Amino acid sequence: MSLAGETAAPSRESSEYEQNTAERDVEKAMIPEEEVQKDEPEKLKDQDDIGSELEKHLSRKSTRKHHLAPEVFPLMDLENNLVGWDFQDDPLNPRNFPENRKWFIMTLISAITFLCPLTSSIFAPAVSFMNADFHNTSQILGAFAVSVFVLGFAVGPLLLGPLSEIYGRRIVLNGANVIFCAFDLGCALAPNLSALIVMRFLGGVGGSACLTVGSGVIADLFPAEQRGKAMAVYSTGILFGPVLGPILGGFIAQQAGWRWVFWVVFIASCCIASGLFILYRETNHVVILDWKTAKLRKEMNRPELQNVMTYQKDAAARSPATVLKQGIIRPLKMLTRSPIVFFLSIYVAFIFGLLYLLFTTITEVYITTYGWSPQLCGLAYLGLGVGFFVGLIFVARTSDATIIKLTKKHGVYEPEYRLAPCLMFGFFIPISFFWYGWCAYYKVHWIVPIIGLIPFGFGSMGVFMPIQTYMVDSYPQYAASAMAAMTCVRMLFGAVLPLAGPSMYRSLGLGWGNSLLGFVAVGMIPVPALIFKYGTQLRKKSPLKL
Image (cartoon, rainbow, N blue to C red; front, side, top):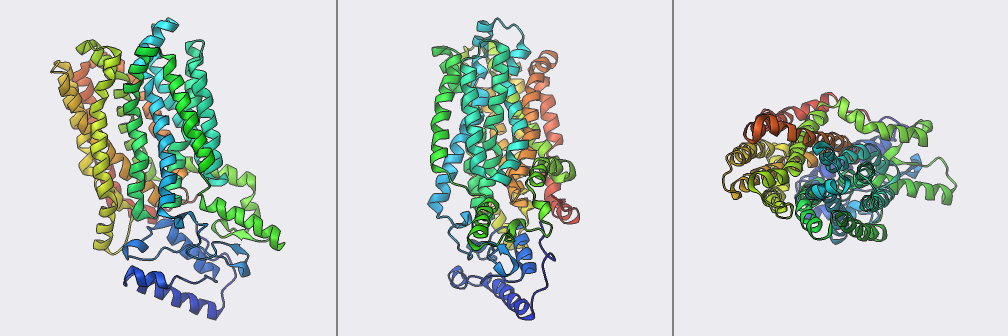
């Protein structure tokens, strides 16, 4: 959002001062960090320069740590009725929180982000027990009882993501966690299949908050050169949760019954949600400055004061109704008006759909092909888990290092550098489906198809994490909305594609059915490569107006 040109022209002295400050900032990028920190930028007095610096802050990586350029935050400018941070190292700014506090917050967010996706798949091995209890003979309805939770994941972010940008991360997370816990309890007490499906859907809506708000929290806390590591920690739950879910669900259902699957989730979710409610404090920069603005208006009796990050000449443009409307439609605007957001969302959604297709069919494949019990079938998901773990370690160690290396090489940072590894990782995904499909078709030893799933886990992590971090780097102020757009498409594929799995396997068999998916995956490999090459031009020629 550009603020340039929206205030009165600055004085000559102010302009000269800001020009000298900008020159000193450039010089700081070329000297050791210790000297840079001795001379923090002084208070910006020219609103045009505040807008310019703010836009740079919202669109490029923070590079203070790696000697590339200092990160600039919008400061107080009461002469122009603008409220910002008191100084560059303002402790109220979440970007300046101590490192241990940042990672404590990430641990809390990652915990609930692990549990919600785990809940999406933990019920898969228990479906046969539920079918017997409710006398259900429809295989599609049984699969839908699993995937409908993911459908809730698709709907929730469109509302919860934008709301977190308007009213804050904390209130949205806590409210959504209450919904998630309540409908987990409803699933445990469901009197029939219809009620169970409704409860699963609404629980998914509540559980979806962490999938979008978490990315916003990362943008709040970390500069771009640290987001790769933070995203790796955060993404662990998104990908490992669904893998561990069936393993736990199989044992719980076998030993205690399918309802205890939901009782266990309910107890765990209440514990984590309580921890978040007590320990997590607001990190949204805009909301914190909104609170500060409201406080100063009252204390100084200056109703004309405005938040520098949301400054507009026309106060009506910031009316609550307008802000809410803009926030709700923002993810849809990003999805429909940006080819970058659209095509990357489709690519990630297809991979996610493949993942949930595996979640809903692996149990059936190993029961019918290898004669395993539902309890034992959970172990078949370990191949995915190993792949995710190896991919996580690899990406966490190389993601931030890659962008630092490319920035040093080209002399400027572009978010597209995040996508550099995706082409290599993309090839592992189709390899898995050819391997897993034909080995299961020919009934090769049971360990071989499980090993064949490792490349899929490795490749998925190597595609998913860089693309998600790229979205946060490209739209840091609207990271939650960007992730809401991507999550909506991703979860729609995750809910619908598994429903086609059983009929596809019946028609084509395990060999050609999985090969068909592999060929489609091959065709989609160039998507991140094209965005890597042309994304910068697209963003600059057709900037999103949000």
